[in-house]
Image (cartoon, rainbow, N blue to C red):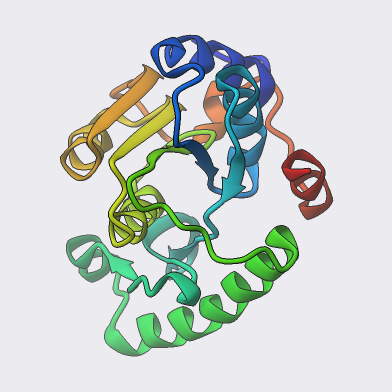
Length: 211
């Protein structure tokens, strides 16, 4: 299955979350940038707020598309998540990881300030949180998002994505309370292969969707 774009994927995914429609204390948290387009469709369908959880993937040396970990916002007290086995395999030593993490922390802080426009920190205690993105490849970014949200003691964490790599599904399912998806293919090179239109989503568009 190939989606036309993120909007279509989000609408199809929303239908699978019908049971949560009009549920109290429900919030959709999207991973920017592409995840916010999907998240807008979910929040509109479910009748709940949309917000963001800002994370940045730690790229493998020489392979910027391959995530070996991810960094979350400092304001949420989240520690970076590292895939130690993958990091060792691609030659990402401690010095490389420390350098990348420090740089990414500044970018995460900047983006959180830009997207949330001074809103107070989210209170997710006893809430049902739907975490979404336009797709999950290695699962590193989603894993750090789950771990950061879990610290706030939500009632339930649901990961809802249009597509997730089959070998990442088990890992994400072990961290979340529920995983909702449209497809989980074994042959998975990049999220973009499952979309006809997969243009880069600008920060301006993210801000527009969050309004």
